[in-house]
Amino acid sequence: MGAETEKDRLKDIDLPLSSDPLTLSHHNGPAPEADRPEKPTVRKTSGMQSGAEAQNPPAAPQTRKLADETAAGEAAPEKNPTPPVERVKICPKCAHRQKDFFACSNCGLIFRNWRPEMERELFASLSDEVYGTVQEMWRELENAWDSDEGHKKFIQFCKDNSAVSFASRAYRMRAAKNPDDTRAADNLRRCTEFAGSMLQLLAVPPRSPKSSSVTPGQIAAVVAIGAVLLILVFMLMNSILK
Image 1: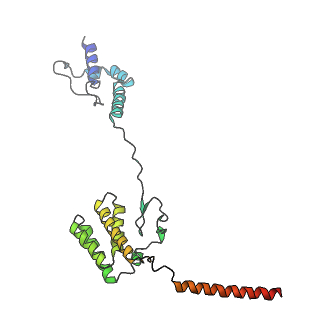
Image 2: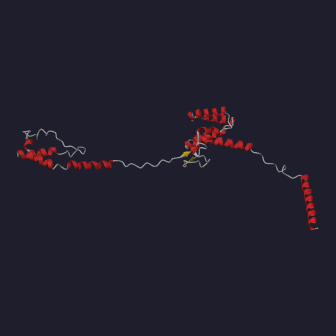
Image 3: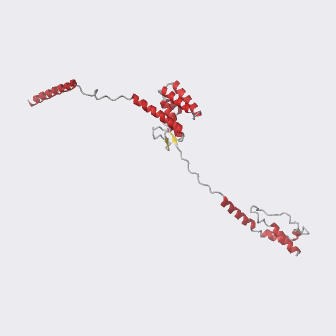
């Protein structure tokens, strides 16, 4: 019972722990106190058995490794494919949103021809002082965007200095970059309504029906000219027939 029992016990100790799925290496610790052999040199006398074990290693580690890889594959969450990002181009001149990156479909600007200094040409009617002031006011307004009083002050200054076109473009550019910005959309509508009312005031009023009526003198002049033309035609026909 001595040699045969000791060989079987050592073989069981060298196997991996089947109760721990994370254990992938052999447990080579000492045997329990109750099962410890009296002579610790038994392994030396079992050279043939150890050689047999080296030639035929247990299949438990490989099986456990495959099971762990399968469990890890099942536990790994499925990665949803990232939706493609929609690229949008904003025209630097008219703030039109589009997918064409070559030229603006609204104003026709070729984007590669745009230069930052061309912005000043859009407001050539403004003096340098007014243009500099509205630029500074707009920068301050962007830093305090939630101030309704700041928006009113900026728009009123633009109205008083004929710079509503600058305010309209600034709010349009802001709304194009931030479509959910309600303040930009509301103030753009105010600037547009003011510009429309100014155009109506500057429009030439239509003539009244009385001013467009024909006077009796004009009628007499037309009749006299017609009579003279008839006489000339009659005389020309007589000369041709003779």
